[in-house]
Length: 226
Image (cartoon, rainbow, N blue to C red; front, top):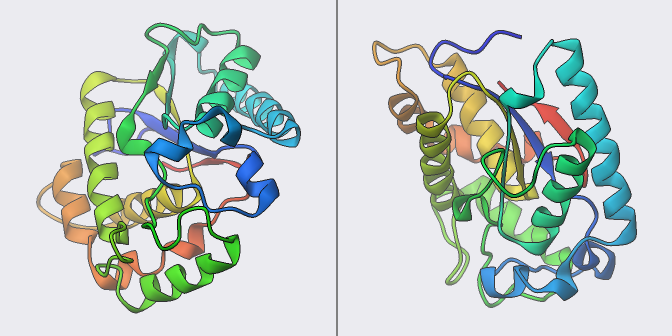
């Protein structure tokens, strides 16, 4: 798997394992709530994270990628931090230090106070809004475009700090759907500008962002992106 010309690194994404909010059917999307220990991984989620780590390790070996070239970048939420720790343990790389980096821009999409701690059933309302207009915010929450903007910042940070690395991005359902949407569109975009920022800006349009649900991930699902 060769790095794509406009990127300095290879990227995989991993949605956190099943969490206590997943089990309870709750939306936990604010940074304040998401970092609480009562919303960490459920036991099944720990097992999913372990299996994802084993799958990632297998892919690294198949591609002859040394562990010293691996970086794990993760959301500060407890469920993503737990997942990243489990994967680092499986890979036998230190969680504290240069291999693993917490990034606030990878946090969960904030759906706003009218959705926070409400039933998962309300996701359907948000995604219907996204499909109609990905620039429209749920009340006091983040639009698809808002999330895309901070993920573009996260990508720029990773690309500036690392070179020739295999980066595992551990985040959440909506952010990872949106990230995949942007990167796949950017990969296909033909332009005289070959840098990442220009490509992402060019594909941040309604027809692209409104389709992010096509890239949905299950809890604990690992996927090579680009």
